[in-house]
Image 1: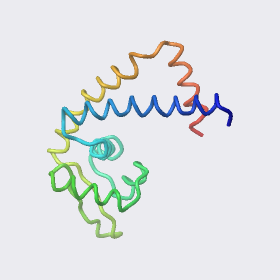
Image 2: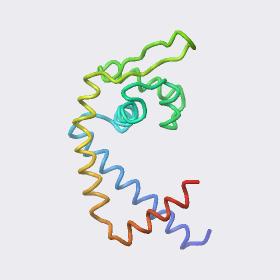
Image 3: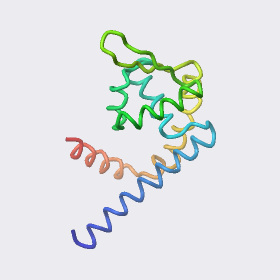
Image 4: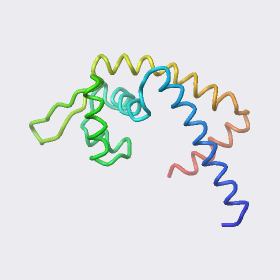
Length: 140
């Protein structure tokens, strides 16, 4: 890579990290949820109607089994989720609790507002078109 290519790569990474960090910070300050907490709760609702097999959850988050297991233990202690053994195949099902659902419901508008403020409101129509084209090309 030449200097210009390295510069654009670093700019892209830095912009993403700053924007993402601001969104997570606002969410955490208002709700007490971490990025991981939100990711787990959101996936349980979005992909599993409130419950998912632990392995499916790990795969959707691109986390290894151990990392997810430790995180779920902390979330379970806070009453956000429950883990239930699945007798048929020795798997584990992760279920969002009413406390977890309430926490997610509280976080969603804060996350949406922060995404709008720190990302979407900064974009022109041309930016949106370029980002969309890039995302389409790189999703393969």
